Every structure is written in structure tokens, then in C-alpha cells.
Image (cartoon, rainbow, N blue to C red; front, side, top):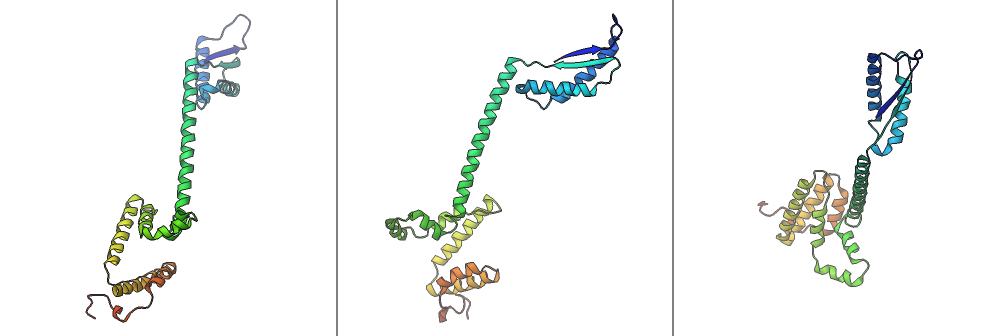
Length: 221
């Protein structure tokens, strides 16, 4: 950076050295602060801002005009340009990743929101695949439990998966009448927690409570 100072002095006279030194020091500090936000790729804009600040800020006696001339080494310009291109590429890749994440989250919230919808999405309207669903059992439920989102993060998702698998294993080993009894109890629990949607989903599976299912197994009643 070079500073060009013009003074209003009698012909043949020069400003005192200490006055000129103070002016250069103060004006250089002003220019340095003004050009900080600018990239070396925007030298012209930085120079204009610096000279505008100089025109507004000097207060030295006999100083008529101050002007800054900025220069940038070619190597610095090349380095800055390469860095800018890298940053642009990084942002482009980040935008692509975010778009892909949004697409996957949308898929999870629509086609993979429950096992029934996931089965329909998997068939793609193919009648042959519809018949193949009988071969998959509860694989869709198990797969969706791994994809379930949770405010608690990955730890909570793993905990939910363990709970779901434990309940599923428990139901698999129950006698039919005990299974029906448990389903009726779950309907009551869901209703008590203001989840009538879940209760309605189980109602069809529970059916009529058989006489032998009036109390849980091992209750002695």
C-alpha cells in the first residue's frame, strides 16, 4: 500500500517530519481497518473504500488530500482464486448432500412411515411382488425399526429397536389365548395415553377376548 499526501503549505516549504509521520501512521491505520473485509480478488473495491474513508477521516493541519494505492502480488491473487474455487466446490457438494438427505428423509416420512405403506411401495404395483409379500414375514417391521427417527438420537433409536424386538419375541412365544389377552391390555394402555390410532390398529388383531384370557398367565386367578 502506498499513501500519497498533498499539503497546503507556502511555496518551497515542507511539512514537519513528525507531522507527516503522524499523518502516515494514522491514515495507514484507517486504511488497514477499512480493507480488512475485502479479498485480494477485489482490489479495486477495497481501494475505493479506503480512499472514501480517507476523504472523511483526516484531521491533520495543512493536509489537503490523501490517497491510497493498493497493490496485490500475482501469487496472492492466484492463491485466493484457487481457495475460492475450492470453497465453491465444497459448498456445491454440501448442497448436493443436503438435497439427498432431504430426499431420504422425505422417503422415510412417506413411503417408509409404516410397514403397510413400505410393502406397497416395495411392490411398485407389480402383482407378482404382491404375492411375494407372504415370504417376507415381519422383515419390513424389523427394517423400519432400524430407520425410525428419534429426538434422542442414535442411542434412543437403538433402545427402541431393542424394545421392539423384545416385545416381538415375547409375542411369538405366547399361547394364542395369552396373546389375545395381552393385545387387549395394550389397547387399554394406548387409549390411556391418548393414542386411539394405535389402539384402533390393535383392535382388529385382538378380536373378542376368550374366557381363558380374563387374566394374565401365572396370575393364579
